[in-house]
Structure formats: C-alpha cells, structure tokens
Image (cartoon, rainbow, N blue to C red; front, top):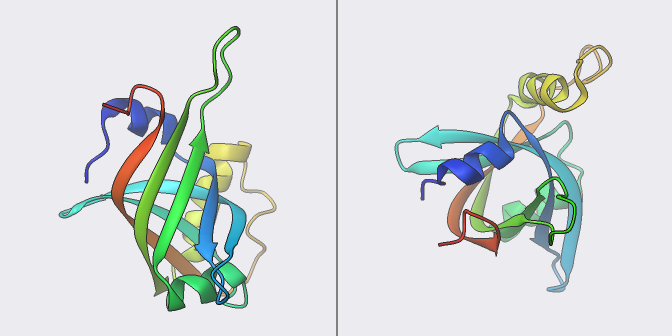
Length: 141
C-alpha cells in the first residue's frame, strides 16, 4: 500500500509513534518508537530501529508479525486531534539501527549529538508493511 500525500506529510522525515505488538499470552504490548517512511517496489513501509534484540517488541514481532501503529498529528485549536492508524505485517531485519536512529534524531530532536551512543551495536530494524490504514484525518478515504 502506498500512503497519500497527507499521510506522508504527517510522517515527514520521522515521527513519534506507538507500536503495538502481541505478547505470548495474547495481550498487547505498547511501545513508543520513532518511525521513518520508506518506499519499496511493493509499497510504503514504516521502519523503526532498535539497538538490542532483548526488547519485548523485537521478540514479539519475531513470533507474531501482526502489529498496529498510531501516529498523532499536531493539535489544532478547536479541532479533534487527527491521527493515522496503521495495521501491518512486520519483520525484523538485522543491522542498520544506528544509521536510522541518527537520521531520526536529527529529524525529531534537531541534533544527533548524543544519540545513538558511539560504538552502538548494529541492532535491528522493524520493517512494517502497511496492510491498511485508518484514523481521523485526510488520509482516510
């Protein structure tokens, strides 16, 4: 699936998001992550980076790839806050975390001076194929 221009603008060079994975007992596990949008031949993907595979979200995705992501828009006075919800299928890819985290730190913090730490491990990327979208905003048709 390819996102429309409004959804692409919301994510921009990077965005704060909630990532929901499924624990072994079936309960949801929610994490706040930074996400980037990357286009592939098969459509758009959301990508998050993790320096360790000890995180629950990484273990959960390896076991159960169905995930949900929510990205909030900036509030507008007098209006309900817009948000983009994504249902997707995720996979874990080894390597690439420091580079993506550096790019996202610049986009979201304005600097990469202290993140990720020097000599960080190659880590892991969670690549999320967008299966469907919803929410409240101009990306919902």
